[in-house]
Every structure is written in C-alpha cells, then in structure tokens.
Length: 78
Image (cartoon, rainbow, N blue to C red; front, side):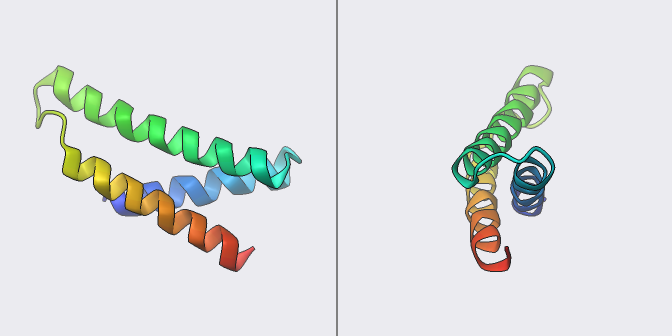
C-alpha cells in the first residue's frame, strides 16, 4: 500500500501543480516529492504516537520506491 499510495500521490501532486497551478516543471517535481515524503513521515509518526505498529523503516523504503516510480512515470508519460 505504501508503494502504490506514494506513486499515486507523487504523480497526482505533480499534475495538479504543473497543469492546474501552472508551476514550472522543477517546482512541480519539488512539490510532489516534498509532499509525498512529508505524508509518509507523517503516517509513520502517527503510527508511532498511536502505538499501533510503530515507526517502520520498511514502509519508508516502500514510500521512497513509490516516489521514484512516480517520477519515472512523470518523465515517461507526460
């Protein structure tokens, strides 16, 4: 789930920033990566604070792989 969610959020955020907000390619990429990374850390921090599963570095690795996949999709499909 972390991989797919991060891929989707990265791709979607880039699209909104670039197409709807008319930001530059560089700014849109930075926003997409930053927002997705922040969401991933926020989710893991929440898990730690709520005592559910704790902070999981494997989930963060899947988030990173999802961000990378999102960037690859942006580069090849847009």
